Image 1 (tube, rainbow, N blue to C red):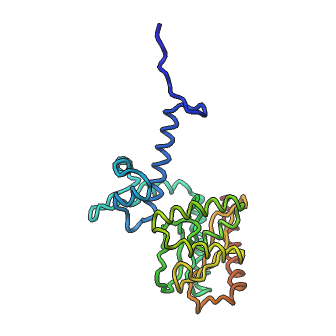
Image 2: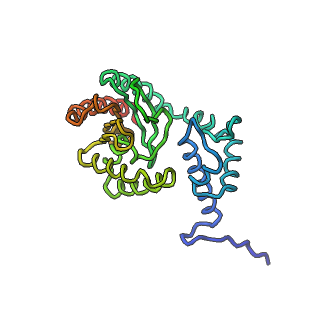
Image 3: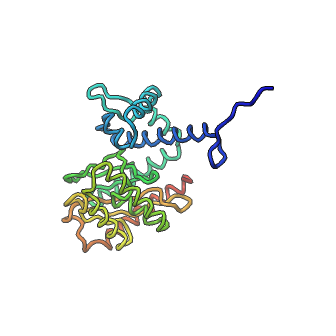
Amino acid sequence: MKVAKKTNVSKDGSPEQLRTGTQSLSKGVHLLRMVAMRPQFGWRLSDLAVACNQGRATVHRMLACLVEERLVEQRQSDRHYLPGPLMYELGLARTEDIGFHARAEVIVKQFAKRMAGIARLQLRSGDEYVCSIREGHLKLTGDMVEVGVRRPLCTSAAGLAIVQTLPIEQAEGIYRRNLVQETLRLGPKRLRALQTLWECSYRHGFGVNFGFLVPGSYAFAVPVKNSAGDAMAAICLVGTPDLYGEDQLTDLRHELEATASLLTAEARRLIL
């Protein structure tokens, strides 16, 4: 009599092989997100392994597969790993998002010109944000948020404008995970500044950054909502203390909310 091959089963009743495959997929997605955090500079293999909290050999094997599939590419000049062309190509399938982006560019550009500062549309991506649009030509020391940059939500006024719309338990969970992520990336040196940013934004009821992270760079933000009423993004205004003093908060919030209303209307029109 033939005996059926035994399948290891995890405690929740799912096959062990399926669970292992799901974990591998999750690690691969996490690796892709980390690669996308440095779209211009890229990553050395050793730094990427540390950032992902994975062994160097494991990360190298995953990267080899992702490079072959064109989701990641390795720059020949310095061997750094960067986002690959397939990332962009897959995004083109989201035609409604492309339509929203085209209309949002016009709105954000007009807002930046009217306010004489830098305006950014920052999209929520899980516990992180991605800079989708940046308009304006004001020179600011230390402002590194360009289009395509991905950062933890709680490291910016725009991210906190999104987080504030969530239930407090969910918001605090994101905050804790963001702190761990930032500590792994930069060490504990910014933790106090991030706490001050959190407290100031919650006190005022929208994203407010009086140069806590980058001295001399002020930022203010409010959420942009989708057709379901969830915060999908935030419109952010960045400038100097001379342009946007603390006594202008009420007016700045009014301007931001007016622009956010236009962007929200476009999102709802496209049923995002």
